[in-house]
Amino acid sequence: MSKPPIIRVVDLHKSFGSHGVLEGINLSIREGSTLVVLGGSGSGKTVLIKHLIGLLKPEKGQVWVDGEDIVPLGDEALARVRRKFGMVFQAAALFDSMTVFENVAFPLRENSEKSEEEIREVVHSRLALFDLKGIDEKFPADLSGGMRKRVGLARAIVLEPKIVLYDEPTTGLDPITTDYVDEMILQAKASLGVTSIVISHDLASAFKVADEVAFLSEGKILELAPPSALRDSKMPAVQRFLDSWFRKNE
Image 1: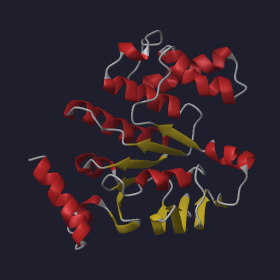
Image 2 (image 1 turned 135 degrees about the horizontal axis):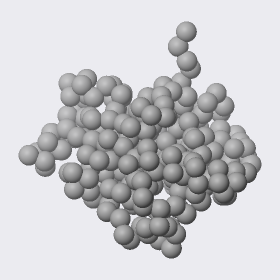
Image 3 (image 1 turned 60 degrees about the vertical axis):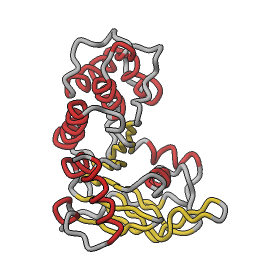
Image 4 (image 1 turned 180 degrees about the vertical axis):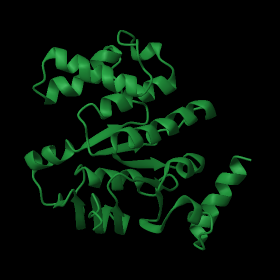
């Protein structure tokens, strides 16, 4: 028997003032899969992600995470749910004044009872996973953009989350570094079995890493399909987005 989805969004609505941002989102994400939420600027991608971790409450709808509707939960219960998530931010969001080791160790020191020896072992295993050996004492300013992203992912998974969220992970990166980041996402899935949710407007990256792509436009998911099927979408908004992206990147 197949597992229930690890995340399920049911008829989600969210407005800011008179502006409707999410207008009836329905979405299921399979455990261990990679979903890319694709759409243009202002389409509601970040608003949707904030609902998945309880940073925003909807006017209507449900958000089920690992079998639990998180919409009615209070702060203490939400904090427990959020420990199931790791987050990789657009700019890596590392602490500039901390070394690489201290950055990756930070969640363990704040949220676990591990000894320093245990913390060192976990940090080194996570750094090694992304080919980051021997950089413990470097500071973020000493690293390339791609290395900062990898350190950000090592920190995001150090508490062994079930789900990793990536917020525009390839924005502003050159093609070679973008390839590194895409491989990093695939590696985290293969090595750790995490469920990955990637917010993006980068079509090439989406097609490389996604099991499914959810195309978000004007507050609705217009298409939910594997990358190969998205190319053949009959939805005008999806076709316009694809055509625009390909013209821009010819």
